[in-house]
Image (tube, rainbow, N blue to C red; front, side, top):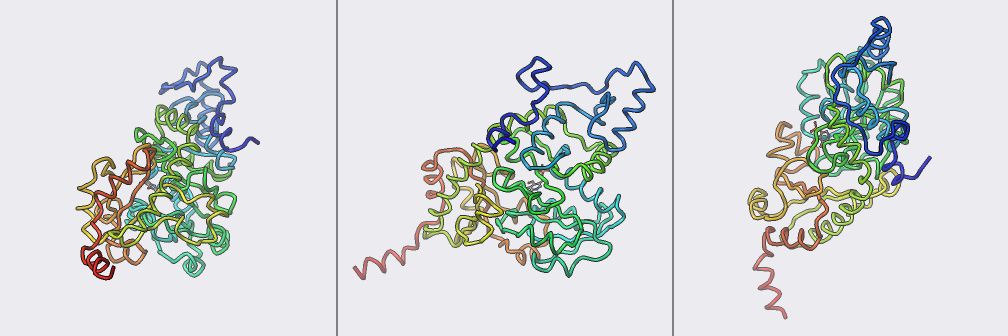
Amino acid sequence: MTRLRTTAVHGGRDDLAALGVHALPIDLSTTYPVPDQAEGGFALQALADGAASATSPVYARLHNPTVARFEQALAALEGTSSAVAFGSGMAAVTAVVQAACVLAGRPHVVAVRPIYGGTDHLLSSGLLGVRTTYAEADRVAEAITPDTGLVVIETPANPNLLLVDIAAVVAQAGGVPVVVDNTFATPVLQNPFAFGATYVLHSGTKYLGGHGDVLGGVVACDEAHAGPLRQVRIVTGAVLHPLGGYLMHRGLATLPLRVEASQRTATDLAARLAGHAGVDRVWHPSLTSSPLLGTQLRGPGAVLAFTTREDPTEVVRRLRLITPAVSLGSVDTLVEHPAALTHRLVPGAEREASGVPADLLRLSVGLEDVEDLWQDLDRALPAPRRVAVKHLAETR
Ligand code: PLP
């Protein structure tokens, strides 16, 4: 087994030399010739039953070699035997719920807030025919019923970076599958499968793609759980386009370097923000004393959150370099107001109760120079209170 940076560069490329190519081939076929129709039928049946591959892909909704290479690479990084890719992170969340709850006949979910607002809304909406109980991380066991098919956690959580002890939740789940949304940490900083998670989910739209130009999702898991996910993907058509598979696979090669660099800058900015007189509170794992940091989570990551003593929309309006936009994990730094955007559909009182104040701003730190980012933030933040300056002057 190779080390992280090597796996990130070489994963999912085993067949390239035999193909006589160096860059990842993009297979755009929607259909594949099956001269022997009976043999084609066996291939179709195998794929429909959840097989990872067959003698022919038959049809692009059943299998795609470009996407399969990306899945192999991601599985290698997460330490799982398999991975199944989807057209978006939300399609991946949907497929996990369908496989673990709907297919398995256990229509109850337990989720620990906060989680991404879209996931929260999906689980609350009843759209998938499941009922959701929200529980604190240390009260998961009490929320489990014989009908519970899935436990949902995110760590670090979107948007307040709350850390959840994966192994402790898995122990409480008592055999009920646990999905960990690993989008914020990426496999560079955390491998939830090693702590007992059944499914490790990513919005590949974020760090995996890394350049803000591809929408996709992926779930890493063992082969026994991958089969039902593929079955769901085939019948619902929630497939990842091969171009998306190519871009996310290419993104993996630089993932460790991007995460390490933006994490360094985020840690520096978190400390500077914490010392700024116009800032009320900063959330970043580097500022906590959580025992999970350095054990479960190998680094604090590159997303932080903060509140100021001013209307957050005013602060965002004054930024010049940092892009005011949802999403995260891109090469450029993005800021957004979760209560207005990503977590808008979560009822306000419940959002606040999960530790996400209405005036919290989320900052996804990119690859720019830290001094340019700080200059932009410092200019946009509320000025230090005049009264404090006057007081200092008077007592000098
Ligand atoms: N999970 C997390 C933590 C997210 O932040 C997001 C999107 O912001 C999603 C899942 C959904 O992913 P997508 O937008 O690719 O559907």
